[in-house]
Image (cartoon, rainbow, N blue to C red; front, side, top):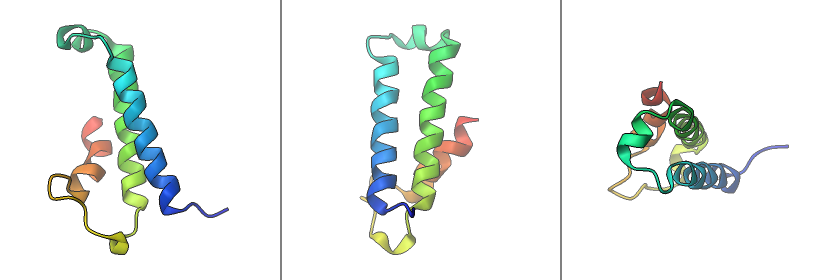
Length: 79
């Protein structure tokens, strides 16, 4: 079964929501020292980056504040 644009956008949305849930209520200094949470957030960023790479170039313009390369770079930079 072929995945649609909506599927990839939902993947990105869900990964972003999960990342926010992982850090909810945490102070930055707590996050820095919590490897499990940091790795979970990194994985969410990887999922977002992978989904962004699958969105066809001709889909439309990204808002100026969100560049395609920054979304795709999430996966690469998270490592």
